[in-house]
Length: 155
Image 1 (cartoon, one colour):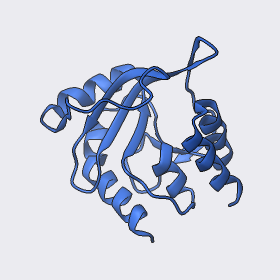
Image 2: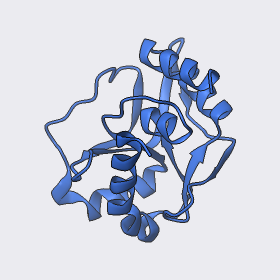
Image 3: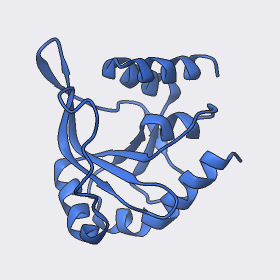
């Protein structure tokens, strides 16, 4: 187990109780944490979770004291969602409720079509398949996302 996967595991352990109680729909680990969890060697700065707008609102209520109001995500014009960043011991958690990405001046909802349950954690927490994660990363279209997708291709 790598240092990054241990940090992800510690963060998931910190949040799984609240996720289990607050999520009414499936939620998905995405971004660098998901790339790491499917087996790529990558640095992970935070844990990104894609969920519904309503579930993001429920987590906002539960994690009010952990919210980082001073944080503004880069590439804000590319994405929109019910976004919040929360401080946890091992790494920050970013919740994106109803995430959309702007492609050719049109907003497109980000969806995950192929995933599996993330074993050992909250029942509604899922991990996209490597192919699905590559698709989503290409949809995001940033250089860092293309590099992450390339790591998945090499697995």
